[in-house]
Image 1 (tube, rainbow, N blue to C red):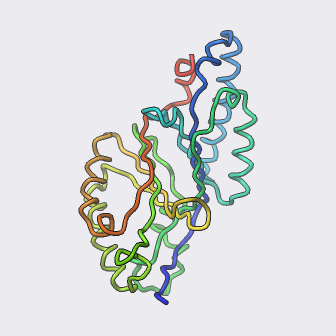
Image 2 (cartoon, rainbow, N blue to C red):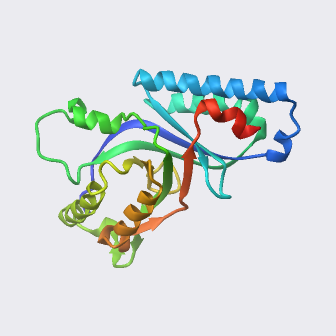
Image 3 (tube, rainbow, N blue to C red):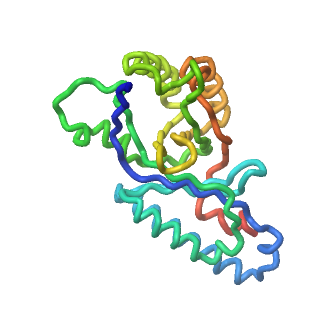
Length: 248
């Protein structure tokens, strides 16, 4: 049996995607719409307060295309808190006009493929803590997609020995480093938690950077030979103060 990669695990992650029932929403009176939007804004304000206290984080974006209209990404220390947050969101009045289109459960993780030998407790390392318990940026654009490592015939990631996997991941990671300052990347592990094995969430102020980064990675062996990908969701930041005009 090959050596399994060990992970450092941080905040639990929940991606919720919705389509808006626009025909029903158009039937609301102005005061009903304002009440609905104010309640949603209050919910997002509470998420911002948690973000400011570094006790969790979130992102709220308008998805481009027909797969969904909204994505709400929430991070919390426990799955119980995420479960309660999802329930709280479902009880908002706006939920009467939202149709669930996709969800993804995972947890922020760092693998030991590129870890350096050290006697230090990694959870006390400031760099590691920032990666495991991140402050999600308010970048202009988001890109989210799930992925697997392939397990087919000769292209079976899990049949490679640890040293080979380390070598491949080192090369793969160098591509990502080339986009430092242009793209912010978060990896969440979902083995045993959802359909795919990982979720990847990217943020950037330039949508084109997503295309450039992912295209370049396609030529790396980790993606070209061992990567299987789900749907890609991209969108534009949706500030709380623009919600009334968005829904109206």
